[in-house]
Image (tube, rainbow, N blue to C red; front, top):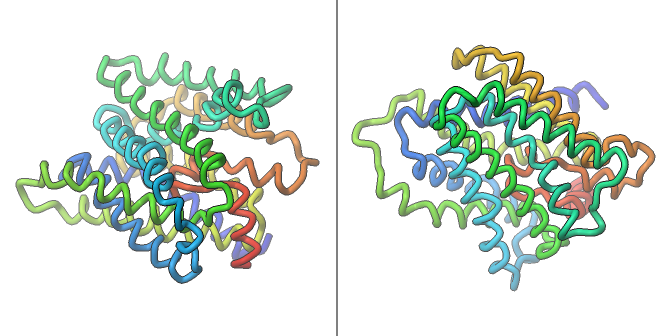
Length: 322
C-alpha cells in the first residue's frame, strides 16, 4: 500500500467513526426524524450524482421495488433506531454496538443462508462477539432502564444491517452498489420526510448542530463512500474493509475527547471482543482464501456508512472504476 492509500484509509475510517458523534451533537437542536431525513437527503444527493456519472442507475430498472423495500430494512429503520438510541447512550457505545452486525449475519446464516454458515473459528467468533455485547450491557449500560433500552435499539439496528445485507445478496445480486446506495438514501429521505415536518425545530438550530448534520450526511455518507470505492480500486476490497475495524476506535476517541464521555475499561474490552469476534465470524483467519472470499467479508459497519455494500458487486465496481 502506498502512503496515499494509507492516508485515505485512515481518513475514511475517521470520518465514518465520527458519524455517532455527529448524531449526538445534532440531537441538541434537531428531532430524530429530521436528522435521518436530512442526513439521507444529503447522502442521496452525493451518491446519486456519482451513480449517474458511473452509469449505475440503468442496471436497476425493474429492481426498484426491491431497492425501496430493502431501504427500509437497511437504512430507514436502523438509522432511526440509532438516532433514538443515542438519546440515552453515549456515542462511543453506539459505534461499538453497531460493529456487532457481522455476529448477527453469522447467526442468521445458520438458518437462512447455508453457504455462509459459520464453522470452526468462525463459530468461535460468534461466541466471542456475543460475550463482548454481554460485557457492554453488564458494565456500561446497566445504569438505568433508559440506557438498556437505548442500547437495545442500537443493537437492533445492527441486526437490521445483517438482515439487509442478506437481502441484498439474494435480491439485488449484481446491482451496482453506488446505484443501490443512492436509491436507498433517496427512498429513506422521502419516507422520513413526514417525521421531519411533524417535528421541526422551534428555534434556529445552532451552527454546531447544523454543521454536524451536514457533515453526517454529505461527508460521512456521501464523500466517504467515494473514498471507499477509490480504496477498493487501489488496494482491493479485502484491505479496504479494514476500515470497518478502525472506525469504532475513532468513535471511542471522539466520544471521550470531544464530547467528554467517560472512558470505560468495559467499553474498550467490549469493543475488543466484538471486533475480534466479527473478524473471526467473517473468516478473518482464512488468509489463503480466494479474492471472492475476502470480498464477501466487508463488515457491516461499512454497510452502515454507505448503506449498501454488496460484496460481489463491489469487486465488479472495482474492476470498472479502477
